[in-house]
Image 1 (cartoon, rainbow, N blue to C red):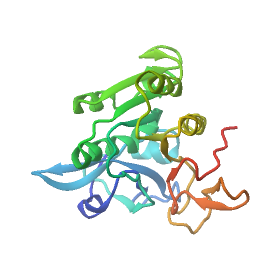
Image 2 (tube, rainbow, N blue to C red):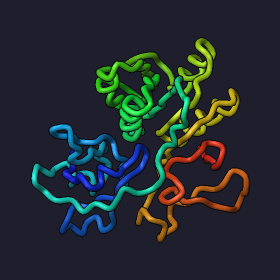
Image 3 (cartoon, one colour):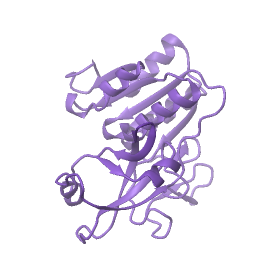
Image 4 (cartoon, one colour):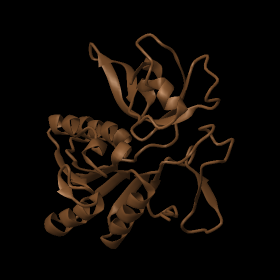
Length: 247
């Protein structure tokens, strides 16, 4: 879905998010968080941004029925995005299902500002869960796909393909990942075992988006019992900084 909001899009960075609600609609009562998926340009000027979403409940079902000209209540950009250190050349982007949403925007940023062409790994349960592979391929980046049922790409889980690529071609300078918690746990463990920098975008339930409700707490890795919050400290974290509960 594209949103005409040039002011927001002009200051947003990859990995940040917005909180969205259909204007004048009170059900659902609270806004919902969505990663910024891409910018929208016209005549070489930024006009707005896109979100990529999956219909899973009342709010997204209502969103799927919107048409051009309808109004959304949007708060953002929020949170901290991906950090892109100077000098990176070999980059892995690892997405599980709808977790691809912020990574496409990151790939565009890397291509435009860092002259980096990442290796993109997409994973899902079946072919229908693999999103944006055509868009990545049109950018000229390498795309590797896995599905658990083998309906598209290699059969298996995406993290196994990532580790295989490291073993065959050597480790990248950095890994960026977004997807289900078990996938993020596995990719964080792989990064740690090969001493690779890794940033993960956590998918958590949020009610406010700016640190008031405290509902998106994430436990610190170095200080059990102490917490960060995905909306203000994240949603992107160094994988070594947080505890990832994949249970």
